[in-house]
Length: 329
Image (cartoon, rainbow, N blue to C red; front, side, top):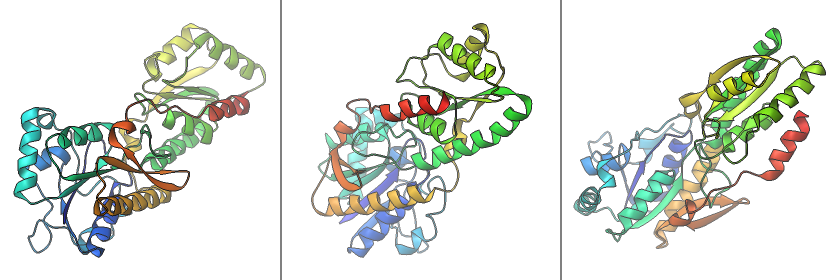
């Protein structure tokens, strides 16, 4: 069997360990792996990884020492051409031309939307791996890249707390999460933030200012406010202005972490998760499974239909919201 593997959409730390597991598990079972560069666009362009022998096949040495690398050695992109019917039909022709029997796409909900659309025209097997820092996919407790993104954000919070203490200031730190507050919530809790603003919860500015005034009266000298980019206020910059207008008792500064959260060497948790899911995806393909995502729920490896992974919003844990309020009060 020939298995194609690619990364699509936003890069996530841990994609390389996942890719490594896909290649080595497939080769160990006696199958070939075709590395497709630049996601769906690379598939359309027939842009394949070429090994040292000049062959479009990934062998064991192709993935040596990549588990520690951030990003993805196959590169990633978003493809407008693939969004069209003509583009997907072209992809089917390319897959047939290169005798690819199965695909393992590593990415998020956009990647899986594309896989579902492709499956309407192609009868090959497709098993996805959840590579997205947002952790917004159903069917897995954590997605590949989430742990590293949170660690990066928490490290930034720790450093900012030093200067906030020195100058008795409030810092609003905007993290990624257009539709999901997972990164913001976990960062706020791990970084000891006093306030978090999420897409899933109402951001009550007067109530926040009241809380800040109480903390100021108690002698609190620094405040951390973690803001998900998708918060309904419009992000950290807008929330900062709203807080000042409402009588915020602290001097404020704003920092947007942005794409910094995507980079860096993957944390051990992401290396292990990527390795487990990559191997599991290969085993699922070889057992005849298709149209599903490999995930880990309560420590157990499970398959979830691709359509179910993005069918509804993945809620943030209410108990962690309650815990943050308790610890910050």
